[in-house]
Image (cartoon, rainbow, N blue to C red; front, side, top):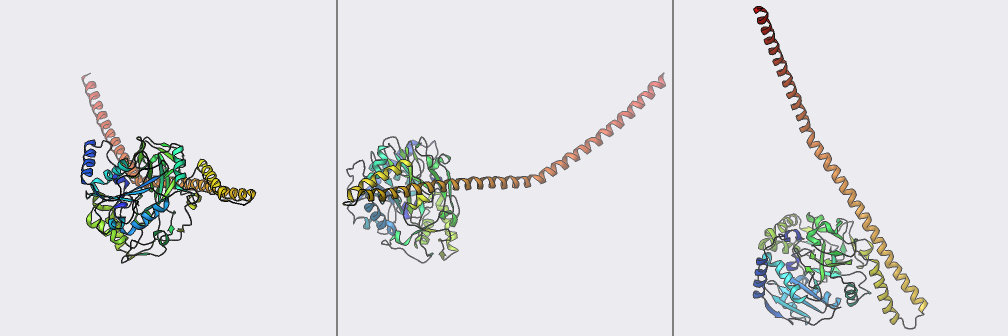
Length: 467
């Protein structure tokens, strides 16, 4: 997904476009904030909720998200979120009406233009609803998950982060898509079971980079607890549409007064203690409604640079009545844990120990009359499997890093060869020029020598005549 996808599910990784000038005008930022506050209208739900340190609120900026909104709310409420706060940006497709049917949902509205106020809107959500607590900002087509969530509940996961004083968590975006092609004339309804109909993903074009190499993602002043955490780029969207979109975000943040979420781009955080594991944002963009959503973005030009990126994608889509996404390298998702094994996600030894202890304590209470030796053997087998998956994941990442380094070296060699080929004609011309200049210089010197000798002979003759 992208920075803008929470509006209509249309944005396609435009973090670079969002990055503000380092010398940003603070007065303009304050002016945007004041204009936003004046424009807000409360539509549904409580304006605030009490919370505990191990409870989560979800924040979402949305416009015309009907195709995703039911799946979004159902996922996060089942996930264990305490409450979901929406900022609607002028939906006209019934999104708000659907949200009114949920008790643990609050809806605010502003009709200010997204293109100018998107960062102010997102930062406002954190400032108003996320202070002193864990808050997750997710686009309407993003469903968050974390490693071993089937055994470690959300409260335990947040306690792990809090006890280690982490204030931000990296999540990697993973595009999910259906087995069948999506159609130009298709449509998607709000009750579409996204997880069940979009079970495939593809890592073949995902590229790994050092975390600190991309300030647009890593922000400034962060402390990284695990050097294995990387910035990922490209992916299946790059395979289909080109470009090098960033896949890495910091959506889960504990606003302690120091951490600055959405700092410069919606992918970044600054002055945060970044956790020692990574999570996933399952991204559900590739629905049958994609064609019409892209056309709408192009008509409205409500994204950066007048939706230039969407216009390029529309050109590609209009050349094909159907979009074939699944390929030989695609895989069917079994669980979030396989993303650890294949190296897409990272977990630390500390987190593995926490999950083992948490799992053991819960299962021990539920074991009943089961012999302890049998319980211990079963638990140890599961723990060993997790450690094995994590080790395989580390090996996968090292292999990928080696591949990237080799690919970079090959690109440098090809570039140097290309530059050498381009320089050869210039070098030949220079040599020819040098030869030509040398020849002319020698000819000139010979002429001057001849003239000088002639003058010397004439002068000698005159002197002898006088004598």
